[in-house]
Length: 594
Image (cartoon, rainbow, N blue to C red; front, side, top):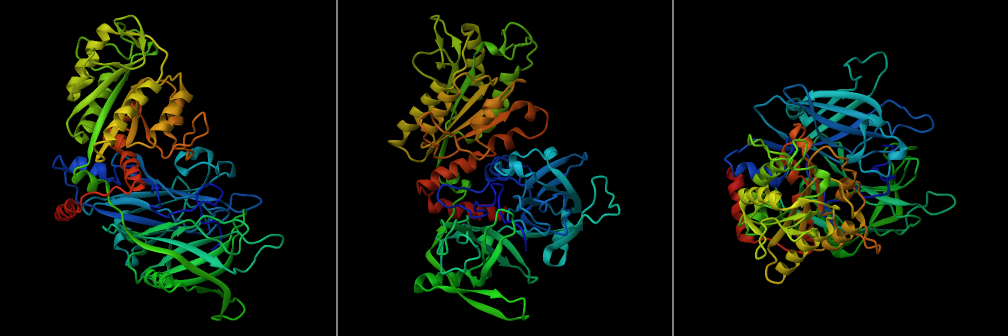
């Protein structure tokens, strides 16, 4: 099969390798694929959705070629069609370079409700080469070439023999026209409720050289054999340049990927080419159990090369695959930690800068309406507060304001919202609302907008807690109109804080340009860098514009909790902090009962 089995970064990065070190797979991003935190929130309110979590694997054939010199570089965007006819995005595959017959590795997660008709729409795009350095999540679809659309109902896939359905691609208006736009095959599998995973390190020796003027640039692609005899790609390693004896970084395979230790896996070694026309160096078939045996015996497995000249004949190669490390791991979930006594502590900071407008005029974001209608900040505090209050163990919030001129006439970039000199904490969401309304009567809006001091204060509280309790995780909520003055100082503070059990949710109110907030969010795949060149240990920022929540594009629960579980788990796993085993067993039993 041609093409580069890759993500968007030119195809050299690993894809689907799971949880190695601090890295994490992306969390589901829509209500159709609830993450642990969202599911737990709704279940606690007596809402127990009866659904089966599925993963959709996608492959294409005979896709339309829109490139002149090479072939199309396809990506699939999957949607579910809601009752009002609007499309809600479920997820995106990676980009596969230069291929009209792609097999994507990234899966689409969807919750299958037996009692509901769930129409699915799949759009296939040819991604322009200038966007290869961007994560697919950030790609603007209008900038890409549309290759075709396929549609079905989820139950059609589930009830099909082998749970695979092949769709004819057509134009957006539903017409197929005279031109064949190719086919898209969708394969569904139920997610495996297991924490079991394996971490392996592969190396190869004496690989065949496929390059003329240098050495091969090898990478491995691993696929799982499925019931109908076909294979589904589950991951690929990064590319090791110019090396016939490569050692790859550790990769972690979950039981969802390999199903069982006896299930056969196809391991293919390719020589990477930037054109996407990768050359097969060799392949072999081994189960996870057999890989474990190779590790214990410290022996290698020889690659074979299928011969096209004589059908059925396979050439055994000198090149071999070795397993340098094999260990079984337990991957604990967000709920495992929460249910075993890990606590969340939220802190709140409100923007009191002059860019919000005079609080006494109705066009101000801080205007308090006598009719009781909430302003933008009150609405954000109430809607966001319900969610964060649920996850906060004692519901006592340190609450600050920033950018305001306090009673003593000085501009403060971090003052106690309740006006008290003795304590910064307030009781619950109503306490935040009362302190906010009171502060508007005593604090004049000023500026500039500086996040640095608020972030440093939150980091210091977090740092102090580590000395006596490692089972706390802190979340700072910043509500702002988005006009930031100290961007680099804020980056420096965030980079320093990235080593701590701390996440920062930035909620944007009003209609300002939030480009600076999006930079801090680092969803473009590039971690923040400080003025001294230090790179953040992990991404700890999530930005949520309230206008999207209010516009119905996403729920406030989904928007706020989209990245928090991943950030939390990244920290806990990187420090090898485990939840209590007793509570895990109880949690698993109760969820199984539901």
